[in-house]
Length: 205
Image 1 (cartoon, rainbow, N blue to C red):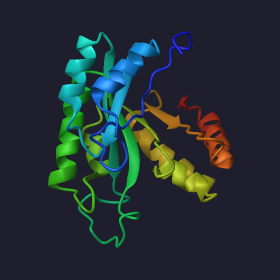
Image 2 (image 1 turned 90 degrees about the vertical axis):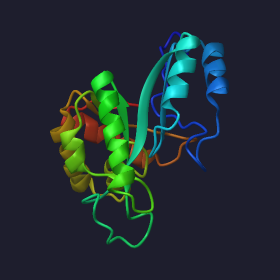
Image 3 (image 1 turned 120 degrees about the vertical axis):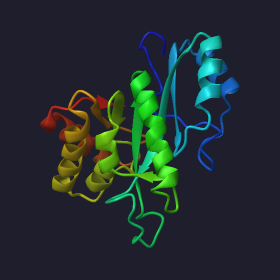
Image 4 (image 1 turned 30 degrees about the horizontal axis):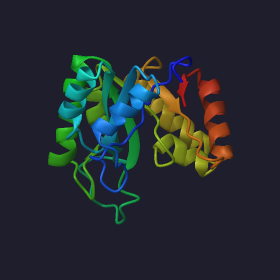
């Protein structure tokens, strides 16, 4: 892995309840074992662990990337009209590229709890537009807006969703995220690769 320069950019720790389980001590020990020089943590809807993660990563001489897998409302974060948890929010990966980005992630996360909470702490594209500086964005998993539309076979809607994020972050800070676990959803992966190529966007796997 060291020869390929592999870096986890979508990773859940013990602060992602019912999803992640790894503690930072175990994570950083594994990074050392695999000669990984850098690792991100993107917990679901919160940044509760970032100080602990940053401090321990620096002590272990591993570069920490601070991020979040945000819950983003399909419309306004203030809207509570959706009836089910699955319809109330998409997923979106946000990574701080500098101190400004880190401060903006804190603002976004706080807004998710104080203004947008509905089943989960949610933000929306309006507040992303206001606090996007210093943040790199990827389209996330099957529960991301772009990926969900590809899974539904709606390439037009997927492109529209991707264009909305390009408008916010620019093509240099928005990436199409590819995931493949044991061959799951190969058509979705291919659809995302095709979309990235057509739009001239970078991708992360």
